[in-house]
Figure 1 (spheres, one colour):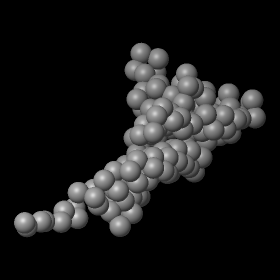
Figure 2 (cartoon, one colour):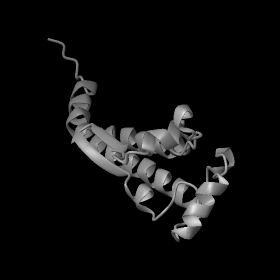
Figure 3 (tube, rainbow, N blue to C red):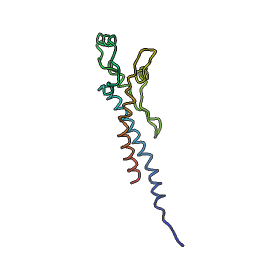
Figure 4 (cartoon, rainbow, N blue to C red):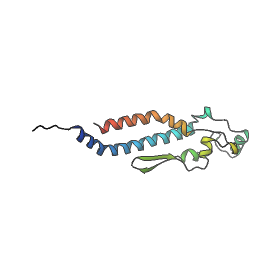
Length: 143
C-alpha cells in the first residue's frame, strides 16, 4: 500500500476557519481608515484645491451667523456625520445621512452648487493602507 500525505488540504481548512475572523477585523480596520480620511479631508480642507470658492454671499452669511469660514464646514456636524456601519461579517459601509452629502460630493447644477468632492479623493488616499491591511491579513491567515 502506498499513501500520500496531503498537507495543503488541512492547511487550507485551518486558513478558512481563521480567515473569516481575520477578514472581518481587516474590513473593520479598512472602513475606519476611510472614515478617518473623509473626516480629515473635510476638516483640514485637504482636497480644497479642486473645490470652487464659496460665493461672496455664502461667505457673508457664514460670517454673520458666526459659522466657520471653511468650505463644507459650518458647525462641524457634517464631517462628524460620517459613520461606519457593519452589515454582516464581510460588509462595512462608510457614509452619512446628511442631506447635503450627495450635492456637495457631485454638485447640483440646477441648484447652483459646484462639485466639492471629498469622499472620492479620500477613497484614493485609502487605497494603499487598505491594500497593506489585506496583505497582512492574508499572511496571517496562511501562517
